[in-house]
Image (cartoon, rainbow over all chains, first blue to last red; front, side):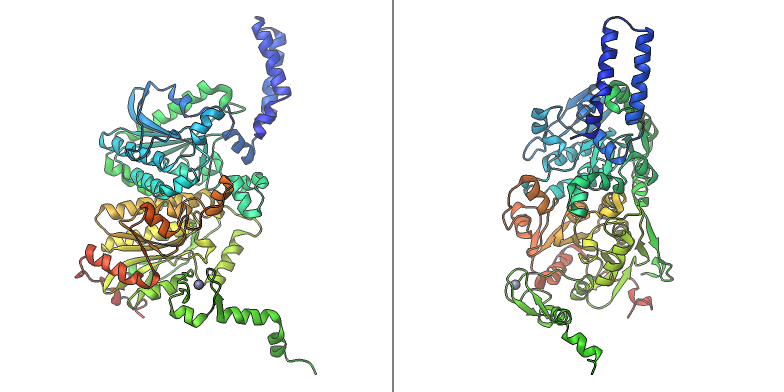
Length: 324
Length: 294
Ligand SMILES: [Zn+2]
């Protein structure tokens, strides 16, 4: 059960239906419609004006939230490339050449399904080793031809199945990370929905990390975390509070560089408008990165992640300077 | 007459059990009661069934190095960046793990020689927070690789980890990126990087610096994988075969270079070093640092 979907039912839907009815009757601009619209905005604000971390997790998983293919529809063009050249093509990870705002890029994203049938085909956006190997191949391709890499992150995590273990999921993710560490081109990653752990990071070791306001990015799923901590996955909401997985939290830690604000009530309430502002942000970030020489890019990437973390220092005379 | 304190304590069943545990260890694999001194003398490998007990980081280092071990990175200690509390506050968990393990974090890093080969050595320990990777583990590994790089020494890391450390949230996950960048830079410059996967190696450590090396060895019977066995069983609602995610299973699937029993580890590592590294290179001025040369 999605708490956001539940909250959208009842008065909000009813009010929305009445507004639609009046609009359909050509009553736009009438005072009756204006009053209803005003009520609708106030109700939206009541319901979604302030979201808890757990509510944001549900927003990130909202069945109507735009997925990678919705973003792709707003690109100039996209030519999908398939397969890991070893075993199969993983539909949970899509990639290929694309043109965005006139710029040639290589695009990579986790793709959730819109309905049950597509979700089964796309494994709910949970990528298998073959998907990560395809991603690695395309990262290297981008680097060879000087094409910036744009990724969209939207996964609850890497696929945890038997076949994935047999095909060395760890190695596939590790190799994807290593490929991003060494590419000579700008990498811009955007968390558009759920950023689930290592399976998300595999395509997000980026020069710039953007996050949609209500997306989440977490070391473990709140359910998994609650199961480990209290042996009770029903306490996911408490776990979500502790994990610091919201865009604000992560910007505070220096893990996220830009946040794209969402319409009140979530990205799905104005998908085209929201997608346009995400693509504008990606475009601006690419413009800032694209003229930097490869060595400088890689050095900045190194320093960016080298800095992340917090620890305590014990003052010590014989620090590294005294070493061989 | 009152019973003397020492006698009363001796009579308590808990003390006997404690004393017993100090002297005897039960093999989790074959159930044999093993006399601890014999077990330790046998590198913590069951004398009956060759089950490999998990090893303390310093015991492992002692088993491997020629003599001195120059530890680095000890000035980096875990903080509490999220102000994490679950059943207990994170700092309290750290404190009890420090006492339990005699370690300041889940990895020990430093320099030593192996059969004369100077190397940078990182050894993780499951006894500290399940070997999970928080900021300090990531930082110490990256620091080790950078220091090894400066000296152009091969780097060997023994992994043992339950994955990224939940109590440090996304800061822990980001250590996967940090260590990857350090490994990549180190290897790109022609330096040898080896990993030895020990029981257990999973999650964020498995999916970063454990599997990015030139040579991947695994200790016999070690459990290795991305997703934890329990997670897979719960997701699929089926029981997994016993050999699933073992070192031997990974060897068969082609994911690792070799499976090595603990008794042959040192010798096997030295053989690889002998192929890949110029033996004439010596540890620069290790002995010149008085506070380190013991
Ligand atoms: Zn045994």
